[in-house]
Amino acid sequence: MKLDLTSMSARLASDATITDYDFWRAIKMLDDELYRAERGGRPIPMQLLYARKALRAAHARRLRRKR
Image (cartoon, rainbow, N blue to C red):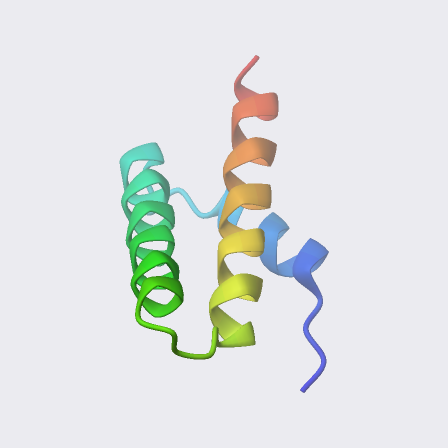
């Protein structure tokens, strides 16, 4: 499956129904899940890494737009 993180983050950043708090919560939950996987010696799912990257990029794009 090919993911286009740039277009995905652009769509997320422009979605007015997603608040900055929603971005922060989602990133925090992904970070927590990745931490638990690492500490438990489990393999790290690539989808979680892609999701975190897309959310961080979308949040950064939105913050740049607000300035």
